[in-house]
Amino acid sequence: MTNDSNNFMRKRKAAVEKKITDIQPDKDIRVRLLGTIIGMGNSTLMLDDGSSQIEIIFDQDVSNMKQGQLIRVIARILPLTEGFECKGECIQLLDGFDIELYKSACNKL
View 1 (tube, rainbow, N blue to C red):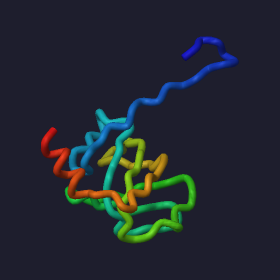
View 2: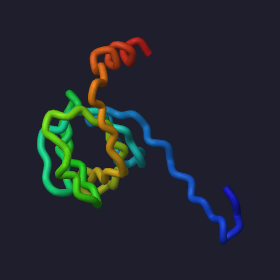
View 3: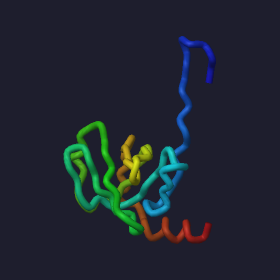
């Protein structure tokens, strides 16, 4: 990073791997969520990670996604008076991803 106003770069907070039920809106800024698409709209996805479900709102059209696809989403958590909003930044398709091997590895950590 530099202080030169012409070359200013903003550093993003790292996205932390979380289960939906573990999101803490007062502490979490950016999260990585891994789950299955269970519903969608033009700019929203409903994601199920096995612990809970969450609606993720995007600035762009995500209607090209398919119900049942396994994905990873990086999202910003925006605290509200009651609960929080999840604002999607990017989607990683996980076609061919071995979710059982992943869960097994996570359990050993």
